Each structure stands twice: as structure tokens, then as C-alpha cells.
Image (cartoon, rainbow, N blue to C red; front, top):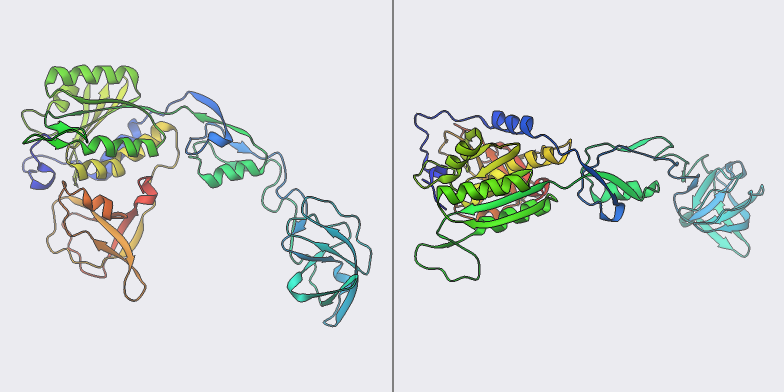
Length: 419
């Protein structure tokens, strides 16, 4: 990719770098969410953002039911520890209603089946001995034992999912459990992407000397797909200022967000930043982070713009750290921050850097079974193998050394929709 390569070269002298926290806050404050909504079937709601809070119109469970296979009894019929034989008066499978339980009898009952009137406990079948027409039970049996009460999980009128929730499979299951068949969600965010660099070729093409395959296109497409974006891919544009401006204007007309890779550094042929300054506004450029210092953010008219670095690892890291929460906020999500964990390092970092560094790492069990952070040995911003090997990013703060056992923040890729 074009650029001076200053992701790793440390060309920071004389330039003020924006702190990570300030950069992220600027992005989130500028992320005006889409407002248009649509109704979708619950079957098609995976990953969508709720535009309306969901309430239950039923109790869950709808009636007292058995927590296990066994026998429904009246606890008063089993007052002591003596084994007692009860006649089995009825059989109640799940989905069927029993009749009132006669005193001195038991009902054979199965998990999820409604508790018959008169019964107030269930005895698990493992401590029962069936015989002809009856069952032997060792008491006593506690009142309410092994019974799930009506409304124990959800009651009529309860809020089950908040507006702004990104729907996970378990959320969809929760909505289904109260009979909801469709939900109102925000429309998909339209994201246009294009790439600059005359050296770029697509996989399958033959490389000439000085050319490289455009891995960033495929990385960004995959990450945007995982975030449920509607994608407009303009491919690779000619590496000139006029071609860059033309692609930028077309993308801005058709999308809510324009994203590019490369051309945002300080080289003479880095046209993305120049085009943005001429067509719109540049609100942010250089961040105190490694990899990915040159990250251009601004607007083209009313359309948001994110210019990612050119180095493959920098694209991946800045997408995780900055683009992902920004996109989630624009989609209408209320939860944008990835959960971080404090995990001991299993490596040494003896040369403190001037910038906060997100290193590609993985959490694994050491010989004692304790979870520790292991570091990929080559951390260059062109080493894409590090992102495939890792299962998360570990943060090493600026001006910090690390020794084995030191606690570091670790963000799993599973928290960032990239794993």
C-alpha cells in the first residue's frame, strides 16, 4: 500500500498525536445513528439492531410445571423419612393438562408438564421405585420441590429486550419464547468501500514486479459482513487525486459511511487525505496508537468517512478498535465497547514505545492450567499471519515494559465480531 510506512517507523517528531480515548470519543460523538426502521421476521433478525423495546404479553413459564421427570405429589402425604407407597392415579406428559390430584396418590409427570391442581411438589424419578400401579417414595418431600412457578422467568408486561440491542441467537430465542414473530429493527447501514494503489491486484491475477494482492479489501469486506452492513464495493481506483475524488463523491452519494484503505499518510501519492480535505472536512488524522497511527476521519457532505491505514495489520487493528464501535453506534446499537479481560502475560516486553500498542496475542493455558497471554513473535504491521494466529489483542500502554506475570488488558476477537 502507498504511504511512508510510519505505522512502525516512529515518525512522530513534531506532531501531536491524539490519545486513543479522545479519538474514540470523537468518533462516537460524531456517529449519528440511522433512524429508518423496518419490520423483519424473527427468523431473519440475527445481528440486527432493535429499534423498539420488546415486552412480554405472557408469563414464562405460563403455568407451574415440573423441573424434571418424576412424580407429582402432595407434600402432606409424605411427612417423614419413612418409605411410603402411593398409587399412581394419572400420567402427565409435557403439553397435556392433568386433573386434580387425589389425596394419597401420585401423578407420573415429565419435564415441562403442568403441575396438576392439588400437587405441590415433584419427586425425581431417581429416588422412586415404581411397582404395579404405584410408586414407593422415601420422604419427606419439601413443599415446592422441583416445581418451576408460573412467571418465574418472565411475567406479563416485563421488558425483555431494550431498544438498541444487537440481536444475538439467545435474544431471538428469548423473543420467540414469548410468542413474538417479528421485530422492528433499524435498516442496515450502507457502507461504501474503495482502495487506492496502482500496485494492487486481485487474488487470481498474476503479479508483476512491485505488485501485491489486495488483502485489505477482503479483510474489510469480511468484517463489515460480520457487522451486518449493506456493502457497496467500488474496488480499486486509479492512484490519482482526480480518480480518488471521483470515487469519494460517488461513494458519499450512495452510502451512510465511506471507508478506504491506504493513502492517508504523508507521502506525495497519498491522495485520500488530500481528497477529503478538498471535498469535505478532516476531523481527525493521527492517533497515539500502534499499529494504525494514520486514521483519517471526517465527512463528505453529510456522509461519514473513515480512511484506514494501508498496512494489513493496521487495517485489521484499527477496524477492531475504532471502526467497529463507530459502526455499531451508527447502526443504533447502545452497546459498542468490547469487553476486556485482565490476563497475566507470559512474555517480556523490554523496550517501551511512545505509543499505546495493540499486540496480536492469544490466551492459552500454561503448564499449570492458568490462562496467560502469549505473544506472536513478529509484530510488524505487514505480518498478517499474526492476526490469523491470534485470538485477541493485548494492550501494552505507552512507555511501559512488561515482564511475565504482569497483568494486561486483553480483548478477544470473539468480542469484536471478527472470530
